[in-house]
Image (cartoon, rainbow, N blue to C red; front, side):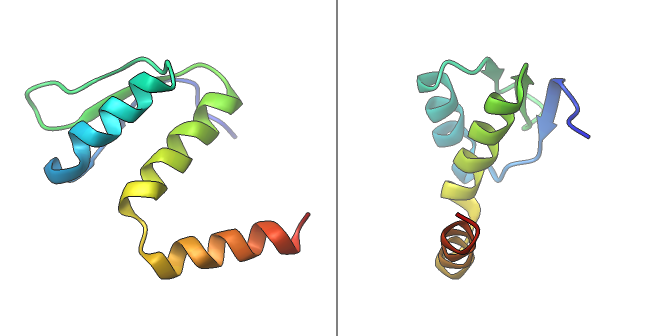
Length: 76
């Protein structure tokens, strides 16, 4: 089940600001507090998908991304 509301993501510091910036471009409310986390406000399933996709773009390996894309093609 989808948990809406504020989500706290533990993202490596090297990627946190890039992910934060991309989520802001997508108009998803987020912040980077001093504790090192990334806080994201998820208000819909669409926003949850966008957050997951954005995080995958920065953190998944090429192999994981290829497998995910192939899975999308097989299920469409």
